[in-house]
Image 1 (cartoon, helix red, strand yellow):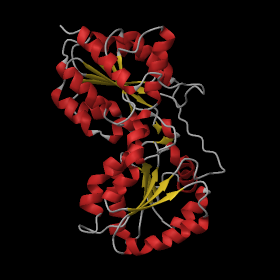
Image 2 (image 1 turned 180 degrees about the horizontal axis):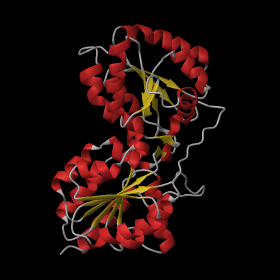
Image 3 (image 1 turned 30 degrees about the vertical axis):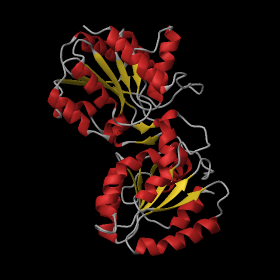
Image 4 (image 1 turned 60 degrees about the vertical axis):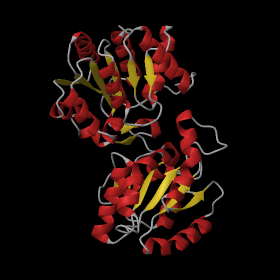
Length: 375
């Protein structure tokens, strides 16, 4: 089904969400029609944030909003769905559009497997009626289900459209870019060179894939790295937990702007504890690039300034390799929590691979490496 037809049938005036590769057609279409006009389309920090923004829209207008997301975001909406939107509380109707990663029987990455298995069940447990949209779903079938859902929405209940892989299409093409010159994979290569044999925790998406391939190209093992392939926004908290309990090690965290935004409260916690051995590198390309390149608000945000406000003793922003190398070297030699924001271009190699080790193999090798280096 064409994204344009899908949007027409939903007949909503406000969309808010977190981009998803499964919903790329919808996301690109919304960008074509609305861009990031906050009165009609808002890319939010996380899915719970979206649910709350949608609730505000309904309270202000009395009209039903749409929240779009990958199914990994269901965990982030459980609290607002149960304690804010639910018809036993404020009865605020929302239409959820959910990309079904890890659908049973469809090959996907390990972080999506269990989430895919429980996607529909979680909706059922929350009392959210759902309809699965696939490649063969006709506009007439979708319109009939939307009409059926109207009664539930009028009663203050939420509904969901679960989107299978390839179910939505878009004829146009969207290109996202910025003015920065540094290439992310090269930035990762510079970090690896400076970090040496120190443990590295990398964030969800292409950063972890690039880190894996840099190690391969260098002929190194992967025991130094914990690749956070799921749980977007939590790599810095994982790094904090490690840093606090391994004060004898320099701990490097390679983060992304979208991930930082998703759970920015983690920076306040890190800044309050101030682990002297944690180096927090945030690669900021102002986009959710791994799932299509839609913009984040971080493109207009001074992440280094946020870090300072959260209590980081040292935070700096760089936009060229010379300054990057200088700050990485300083961080490696400094005693004290620091953050380096790296302004980076969008883009990745077409042939960028994925880790060839399993998540459990990654965990075991990383833990064995940490244990061997224990003082």
